[in-house]
Length: 147
Image (cartoon, rainbow, N blue to C red; front, top):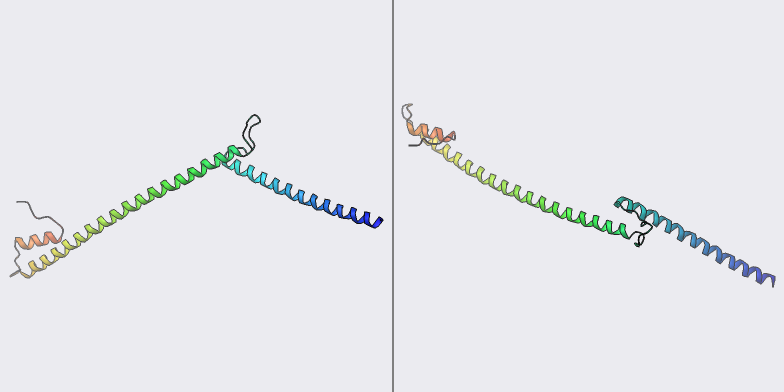
């Protein structure tokens, strides 16, 4: 009989110790969660615990503030992406315009060089005329005189 009582007491003691350890782990996790929530709420600029006379639950005001901050970040990122896209489009447009102007200038320079070479080939007895000076001015990028 004594052995049965001892075994029963031992079983109850082991169960109680297990429940105590399980409860201690639960309290530890609860405390860690409480610390984490308090830290996150402080980072968001709100207190985790509501004021004494408030009807809000703990973390309710903080959760609202975090939602506002998340929305602000999302909106800011969206607007930033829009501004960057507009800048990229503007830069692409300017690059295309510059490339077209450079192409036109290169074609004009090539035509002026051909005209200058033709004018050089037409020179007789080392005497140059108005056409030669016109070709020279054009190859230098100058405009023809207005008449």
